[in-house]
Length: 461
Image (cartoon, rainbow, N blue to C red; front, side):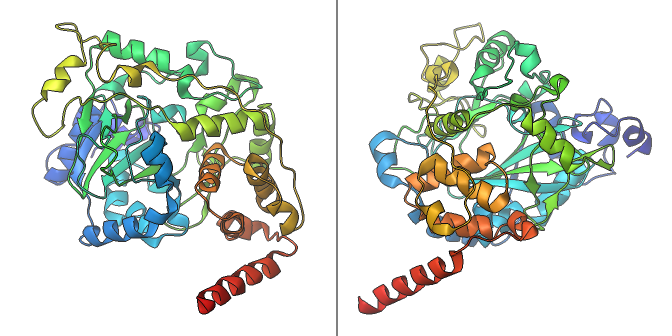
């Protein structure tokens, strides 16, 4: 690789550099790295075999461990979305997949900066999500230093809601609030504000979505600006176990553009932990640390209310449910159903096609709720429910409001029957909480009581 390219454009990932063809040349990298690099550069995604010889055992262990945590009755009755965010915090096998050295080394080569995993999502069924780009949720300064890696924990059937992606859409410009004319100050928005734009871009570009129905152990890397989502899960008797790991890269500021208005001093910085090391990751700009005081100040200017946070979590947890239909298997010729996606000879999405509902979106309604404040003892905290409990737990243990991802995850866990004390335990034992060294009065006694009650119950039975 010619070092002049990294010197002149250090703020552009190598994989998306205008000098790509001079960077990734034969002789500098092995053929598999070059293949993946070319696929990512041209299509925005690349398929590979996950580099762990024990993958089958890991996948089986994850399925066995997490299966009891999901709300299966809700899935079979209404198709309610099922996911666990950041299972790496309590499941070593999830963490092992996220922190795989082969994946980290590959991403580091492709982007030109050290990669680190910051979030995992584990799904037992299809997401059925509207087509979207990650970059409105997870962005960086400089931009595009983010990617996702989706890996199948079992063979995926086309009726089990496979992943959907739009090859070439990563080359579209990065659009933010100012481009679509939406001022998000003082309110909480979802990706729905971008969905009309994505539908029109898809229509105008003529790009055709495809599906990915892989075998167990196949993984798909996608770039931050690639349009992707989930097809209909038409057969609820079939599962679609998979893990998504989101990766950032060092020496960046990590932000959520959808909740930011930088010109007004409103920047939603993300608080991150490196999944591999368990250490907090600092937001940086051109090699310099961004002070926490500045981060707190910019967050405080958003004016976002607790009701907005609750509404965001409710809408995200429900996910968009789509009609039956397949588009195209990435490893095969187009299926007959694929031809109904676009109008003949036009490349324009067909609103009457099986994928139509996924492209049209779903509107959400705001949900009223009460904010939970900080408390100093565990009994007061456990007397709260829903949003008030999660909000108060964050304020009491981490001294901050819940981030959108954490709020969504813990509300979903509460609905699935996870005990409040278990959520308190996880927050209290997080890296962030240990750094603050703050405890809740009565926690140890309550935990010990629950432990002995459970033990005595087992002995008596």
